[in-house]
Image (tube, rainbow, N blue to C red; front, side):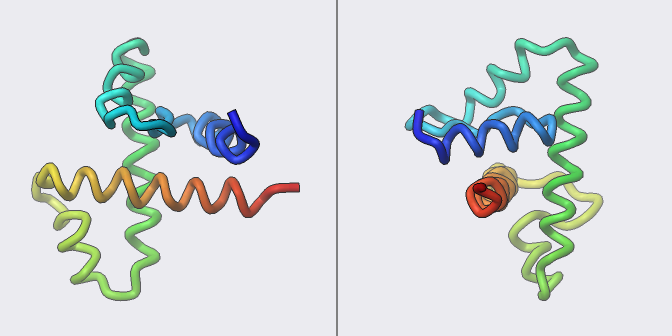
Length: 102
């Protein structure tokens, strides 16, 4: 595992999130990771993820565009919106982790 992957994984763990697949695995590995946790731990992990993507959504300058990407508040997101949420959080965590390199 190269140093960037190690930094990214440690950032996920620091935030208390399930690690996004860093290889060619499908995103269902996140579901597999959550299945290994107790229901209470999985619930906390999901809440932390929601907190992270909401933080990312607030950083968008155009809130209408953010709503179309991430889904409108109070409505269930589509599968593509869920994927966009996961991708956006992953990209931001990757950038934070790799830019913080000593």
